Image: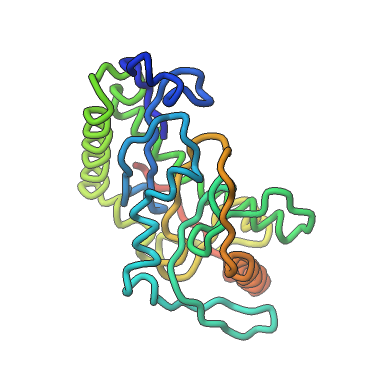
Length: 253
């Protein structure tokens, strides 16, 4: 998310003025389907792009460095009807990030119908974090309007405090628990499944990450990225064919 930074020092304007055309501060967010925010990064100059900022994302670092997360096992269905065990949690993101095995995105230029459907569902699911940005800016006017805080550090404190209050409201209203029970999900048919988000097993792809700016950094590609994304597609196609796709009822955040 980008927050307007009207008091940006003149000598730093080129570092902070990105695609918006005016100085901003950028923050990396991770949230769940219930709109609960699990991570907010430090403030970055608004002209820096996703691929540069994500290298400083400690939430993603934890997915590969913390043993309890890196060794987490989950099951994916195969097209033959079998099950494969995969290890390591990952985050759902858009196509502007590195192709790491723990940052999965849809296929941008998909030719096959299956890839188009799956990629569309990924993008739909990823909209959770976009909704969080809108909710925060609607709930806290200081984020929507040109902020008058004196420096980047003060702006970072402001946005993190707003996020804490947002999470507290979700806990108080019970919305933070949304998606944790089977009753929060409903079965959908093939047509609906291609239009709405889908229920992935356990903690798998629970978190989504927001986008920042345009790309101007060389892309990293993990050896396991394509294999994992193919396995996710196979899982989706198999579950869809057996009528096991669920959609999450809307949550009032």
